Image 1 (cartoon, rainbow over the protein chains, first blue to last red):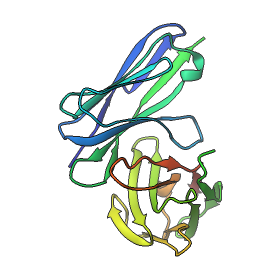
Image 2 (cartoon, each protein chain N blue to C red; image 1 turned 135 degrees about the horizontal axis):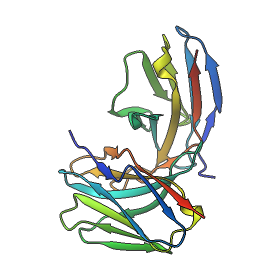
Image 3 (tube, chains in turn red, brown; image 1 turned 180 degrees about the vertical axis):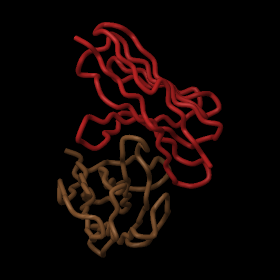
Image 4 (tube, helix red, strand yellow; image 1 turned 90 degrees about the vertical axis):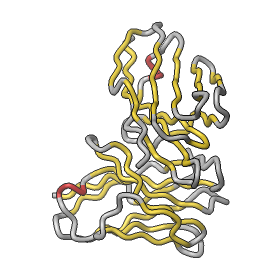
Amino acid sequence: TQLLEQSPQFLSIQEGENLTVYCNSSSVFSSLQWYRQEPGEGPVLLVTVVTGGEVKKLKRLTFQFGDARKDSSLHITAAQPGDTGLYLCAGVGNRDDKIIFGKGTRLHILP
Amino acid sequence: DSGVTQTPKHLITATGQRVTLRCSPRSGDLSVYWYQQSLDQGLQFLIQYYNGEERAKGNILERFSAQQFPDLHSELNLSSLELGDSALYFCASSVAGRLNEQFFGPGTRLTVL
């Protein structure tokens, strides 16, 4: 069974600080997605990474796909209160289109 | 707005009852996915339909069933409801294919009393 482990589960930091959250698996994925979810709403797709070692930037957010396509990280620079939310990673199976979600990192940025 | 609609937004019912949740995918998307989200279990994949056919099954209970209609909207039926079925139920749609990028609806919050 493919599993995606996200760490940390919870993170509370001050506005302006940098942070990194991780998504790890023992399985290889054909692609990996990051979503952000706000309370009472559905997850919103932030980015998809496909190639091992790929780095994508979205303003202050930097996403990296591991060389072996088993893990990913999300780095936020100068965090802002608007970054608060649940960050979910999701892996698309290497042999099929099945998508597996991690349990998420709940991020709280204090003003 | 993702373009995916779900109704109803809230549903309160009693144990033993049956409910139907409805989802309309984004225009042009052929795949529909159903997820259950609770605080302790995270986002759990239930089932996927592609162009009317069941494509993949996840942790869906036998008391639950779904279907996708010719107009591509989908319904999730939950029967013999238990207290533990209280959760947020999300529908997502995608064009399908290898990237499988999904667009989620606003969810239906089900409360079983």
